[in-house]
Length: 228
Image 1: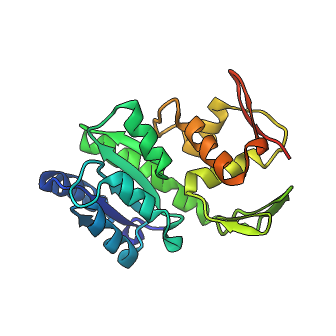
Image 2 (image 1 turned 180 degrees about the vertical axis):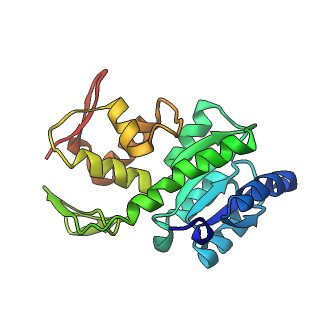
Image 3 (image 1 turned 90 degrees about the vertical axis):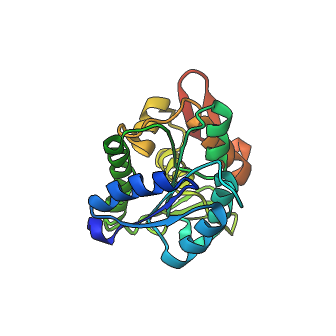
């Protein structure tokens, strides 16, 4: 996919952030739309179907956490990458962001060139998605369609945020194998994207809630494995 075809929705209540970040992303060749709050973001996301949404957390009308949760409920946006860009760097705020379905969390202030680099790293997955694949895997009660980003559990279709899907997809490639935390971060998030130490734990917890606690085993100090 070429840059000019990639759509980014930038959401922030600060006009200077929209202008500076929007300018830098547009200069890279991306199509950039902007919104000033969560409600407007949802309306524009439904209309434009962006490949990436960059969300502030603290906004009027509807904050970024609530907006992210509602965006993740829209089926046609299930593969959209969502990252927070916010001055709030506390652990609880990051955990809330990942709980809401975000793929990444970027803390302000950040230099425009560094932000562009992080955006490029996130968007690399779009190119990976273009690789032809008809891989449909059945593991126990799970059916995983890696091409369509869909899973079925006990006959019921479940829509997972992108990172949860990629984490589940990785663990189920080799049921019973213990995937080390470093390997998970590398294959699911990539070396270019810096995420907090609790990121994997948050995503595993969300998967346990949706698929069942017994399907995932924690190996203390090492990582996780999927139990068939």
